[in-house]
Amino acid sequence: MRAGRLTASVAGIIALTLTAAGCGLSGSSGDGDSTAGGCKVDKGNVGSGKLTGDVKGQITFQTTNLKKDFGDFFNGVIKSFEKAHPGAKVKWIDDPGDNTFTQRTVADAQACTLPDVININAPTATALTKAGYLLDLSVKDPDVAGPFVPSFWKSATFKDASGKAIHTTLPWYTGGVLLTYNKDLLDKAGIDPAKPPTTLFGLFADYEKIAKAGKGKFYATMANPIWRIPADFDQMNIKVLSADGKSAVFADDPRTVQWVSWMAKLYKEGAMPKDSLSSSNDPSTLYSQGKVAYGSTNPSFVRFVKQNSPSVYAKTAVGQQPYDALGRASAGAPQYISVAATSKHAPVALAFAEFLTNAENQTAWCKDPNVVIFPTTTDSLNDPFFQNVTGSDPFSQARKLVADQLKTADTNQTNLSPAVQNAIVAQVQLAMQGKKSPEQAVKDAQAKADELLKQAG
Image (cartoon, rainbow, N blue to C red; front, side):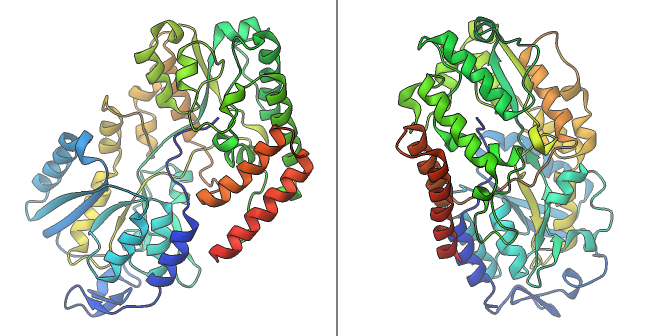
């Protein structure tokens, strides 16, 4: 069960914004010699060649829903940057990050008013890169990749109008995945808590043992498959979408039917609460009550249990997520920092973006007690904050486990629109209720997903 994925692909919005952003609306952001997405810009912002110029002038920095909880931290970062560059000024604004974020941001770009430095997710980066509104960072600073974990730097590429993958983003912060479980409940089921399963079907086999031992008094996990799709498929290395993302292909892999068969069997045998099949609740409440053996896979969940249920926390252990056929850990696409190609003071914007995402500042923010996030720089992941474990404390163990996994984690997870994800989930739920065979449910799920993908273009 995977909670807290940092991004979700909104297919309908992306289709709309890519079309709109590519129409080349004209506008002016200055008296430049070139254009970016229809906006006049300094010629140094686009094309080949390293970006040069004095780090002087005022820029706007936009985050997504961070000012309320992290005002002191970011104001401190801005102050430090301005001290190091006396001629530079940074104005910080904060966007609520609602479901119209991509659409609104593209509209700002078309109006040539895109913030100079902006915190964006993968869907927004996709739209802005294709339309030419973001700085090609690896061209404008050939050394920019240095601090970042290679897999995260690889994930920071998006396709331009010609289809070429370019680095228009800096990976910023991310989450992680691990197993969280109640040792006492595993003991009652005859499962060794010190030997977590290495495959998803191995995990399902443990769920079955818990169902037999629990007999309705406690359960293995929650039933709603929305927490597992497409995360489980990705970990099993089941191809979910075609290479162009325009059609579903998961039904072509026989393991998908096996996965649905397991889910139906486990639900029937009582491994999951019957009333949780369509519930949007994650396992936090029931786990904290000692009624569910496996908790959320989000590392922040471990801290939640520590703060809210000390007695259950004392029985809690963490383990590596099953690597399965993928062969390594997975991590959702991180949040990104980009620089607008339309910036009037691009040297200032690029310098600030790199300063904000450097190892020192990433590590400092991850140490904030109000947040459980993980950095994308190698030096940060090697910091004692992540590497030193305090005795048998599960939270510090979780932090080290995830930090070590992220050094080689896979960051190319499948992004499904809510509509496509829900269509697949609905068919799996019918199979779990015994209303369809697993084979038919998978076939129908792919057909419905294809129909929605076709509509989205």
